[in-house]
Structure formats: structure tokens, C-alpha cells
Image (cartoon, rainbow, N blue to C red; front, top):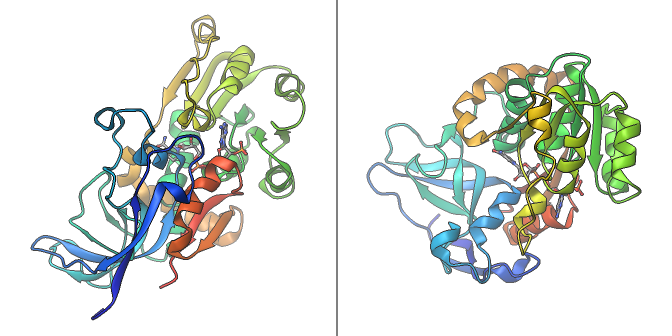
Length: 341
Ligand SMILES: NC(=O)c1ccc[n+]([C@@H]2O[C@H](COP(=O)([O-])OP(=O)(O)OC[C@H]3O[C@@H](n4cnc5c(N)ncnc54)[C@H](OP(=O)(O)O)[C@@H]3O)[C@@H](O)[C@H]2O)c1
């Protein structure tokens, strides 16, 4: 490492409209050294999640309210990294870990932070550790199983169906013998859903009338809605929910940049009339249970019954692009970035 530098992306400008490379500044600085109780990691694989836009912050909104990273500090996200030097009792040189780190070659950590660091389970390749066994797959797995309490034969509708969370959730729902109606935007996503995911019905929200298509796809109503998008589709589903229906609030990408904010769902009284429930899921709180997800999904991945659909960028320079692709809808499957150095 002698003489090498730490390439980094700093948060440079709050988001005003589209997020792009202009919101970040490229810089190079010396590689940091770990203090007592800390380790130094080399970052290898990054995961991108739409909520990272909150870390960049919003123009016109006071930083004290937004939880944004201060301007001039390094942008952060989940990654799989290798410990290259350790003065921490819980991690040793050579360990592969999953943690919340900077968009940079090297990060000093102490295992705590927005989410605790954990060692990548034995036998799990780093791309799977960053995706299907990271925050994304954890949201999909516990959303489909524990929050949705899904049962064979039920009708399961999902938005953002060909994204990181969605692509896993659709397949898990099929493996649990649910009838899956998958909603996504554009031909590339819908082709993957039709040809590879096993979804029973695919609705392209960019074409035609989603309300009409939902009526055709679920004439007897919807038992479960796995919501990644928020916005108007949630209201349409509430209209068609069955008695005892469950809505898993995983994400609301349509709301993250909306200015002024979108109104809340107007059909929520349906929850009363149908003894139905709508429940949030914060995958971060389920991260200590990653070993359960590995036990359940690793054999399925190895046998090919579950596919980790990944959309791969290479090189730290492309990190801003990785995040912006989630908002332009360009990604098919889990948006990952592999480091180049
Ligand atoms: N609860 C948790 O702990 C947890 C954990 C991980 C992720 N999440 C959330 O789960 C959701 C999916 O995350 P992901 O990482 O898998 O992202 P993703 O679905 O791979 O990517 C985002 C997708 O959102 C859709 N989108 C973009 N702009 C939109 C808009 N204005 N309105 C509606 N849809 C829009 C696009 O898909 P289409 O083109 O198909 O519309 C885009 O590809 C996100 O809301 C994320 O924040 C929650």
C-alpha cells in the first residue's frame, strides 16, 4: 500500500431534480490508518439502494432535518470488503466483511455504524454477499416469509419486480407456490420477468392501464402486495385487496425524490373494512439473521432454482452512475459495482 492513494467520492451538492455525477466530487487522499479498536478494509463490491439518495440530501431542505452526509464528506453505502489491517479483536486480516463504508478504496471502521459489520458466511461469493445475502436479499426474504406470512396459492402482487429486491422476492414467492403478478417498467425488465423469473403475469407500468391489467390479473382480489414503488400503484392495490390481505411496505422509490411530497394513499380505509394490514420492514434490523437466509437460499442458488440477477458496473469512477441508474430505472436486477483496483 506504500505510496498508494485512497480514491474517494465526496458528497458535493444536494439533489435538485435528477441525481447524477454532479452531486459528487472525485478526490484522492492518503490511505487512512486504523487506530486501536479499528480495522482498515479494501472495498471490493458495492451495493446500491435507492434510499442512499437521502444521504446525498435535498436542495432547499435543512441538513439538520434530512440526515444527509455533510458536504465534503465521503459518500457511503453497503459493500463487501477485505480486512487488510486490523487492530480490532473481532476481525482479522483477510476477513471478508459486509458493512457500511465510504465510496472509496479504503475505509477505517470499528464494526459499528449505521449497520453492524459482519463476516461474509463461508462459501458465499462476494457478489452474492453484497446482493442476495446483503440488505437486498434480506428485505426480500423476510418480506415474503415473515411479514407477508405468505401461503401457497395466494395471489402476490409486487412492484419494482425486476429490481434488486423484486427479482429475489418474485422468485421466492414462486418457490412458495404463490400466484405472482409482477409490475415493472420497460421491455428489458418485463422480458426477464416473463422469461426467467417464473412470474405468472407481468404488467409493464409504462404501457397501458395498470388498474385494468390488475383487474384482469387478479379477478378475485389480491392477498399480498409487496410494495417497492409506493405512489399510485399502492392505492390501486388497496382497492383490490382481499379480506385478511397483507401489504409489505418495503420501499417507496416514487416518493424519494418527489417535490412537493406525494399525498399518502387515499384508499387506506380498505384496511379496516377487510381486516387487512400494512406493515413496514426495515431489513437492517434483520441483518443479524443473515445466516438463516444463507441456509435457506444458498442451496437454491447453487442448484439454479433461484437466480441472482445482477446488473454489474466496474470501477469506482462509476459509483454515482450506479446510484442514478436506480432512479432512471436502467437497472435490471441488483445494481452492483465491482472495484477496479
Ligand atoms: N425496507 C428495507 O429495509 C429495504 C431494503 C432494501 C431496499 N429497500 C427498498 O426497496 C425498494 C427496491 O430497492 P432495490 O434496491 O431493489 O431497487 P431497484 O428496484 O433495483 O431499483 C429501483 C427501481 O425503482 C423503480 N423506480 C425508479 N424511479 C421510480 C419512480 N419515480 N417511481 C416508481 N418506481 C421508480 C425502477 O423500476 P421500474 O422501472 O420497474 O419501475 C427502478 O429500477 C426501494 O424502494 C428501496 O429503498 C428497502
